[in-house]
Length: 364
View 1 (cartoon, rainbow, N blue to C red):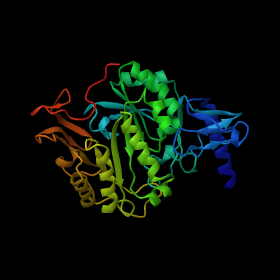
View 2 (tube, rainbow, N blue to C red):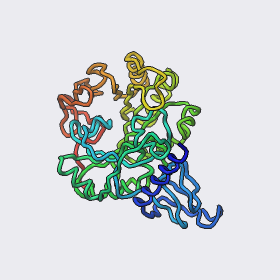
View 3 (spheres, helix red, strand yellow):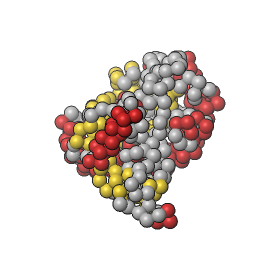
View 4 (cartoon, rainbow, N blue to C red):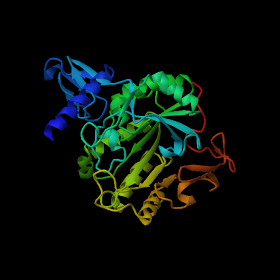
């Protein structure tokens, strides 16, 4: 078995090396740690990578003093999904988003729903084919399918930011919006690098307990700083908390998350979504509807104007968007399906108040 795992690891490493290129944008020289040493700033681990070694993510590596990064492929194929599935509820309701991803992650969440791609490097049971592809071909696929948004997702996009940038630069030239579905374990440097070509960020806030976050592979403070940085730079941000029984479903954590978001802006949407047993966390049941509704109520109590439930049908009130001024129904949803939209140029059709979000394509 050890020989099989070793052979698989060598094969995967060789595959990743064939689909990597040198990049300087998110590498910083670290000569004080030895000749050719680099500091990678793509995520908040800020890995010190010496020649011949890789970072925590295992997909960014140092070869002869140059940082090599993933480039020129997608893992798991391409898919056009409703924008609501990302989930972005305040971005072009009812439109399609073309999703693409790569391999690897800087965290190791035991309940990951995309573990086949995100944990391929760490887990011998994970894995799937990759598709070599040009950045232009991804954008052309989005155009063919009428998708007006291109989103990097499935694995952690921060660690493949250079490839996303190549895709997004072309997408924005075609008038499309661009988005990340991220864990938020970001640095100022990567957010500055992304800002000219990234419009939207869905960020997971997985709890409000540092010890729990350390079990996932980072710290709470790093993620909170990443969220602050994204909001402060003007990205459109929506926050998601997968409510996991026995992990982050206590009122103290949920209220802490809601207060943190409200402290940044009461207009940031908060999605509280239901956990279903998956990957290495099958020791507990799915999130009860009552727990999800309690999380929704906490968000509203803390002053958030837009709180949504997901992954579990709880009724139209908590899945739809309502005007914070006159309480008119603005976007009626059932799950990811949009039934009606009562917005006029991003304003409530009844009272005219501006609704926060991105409801039209930008003029570049």
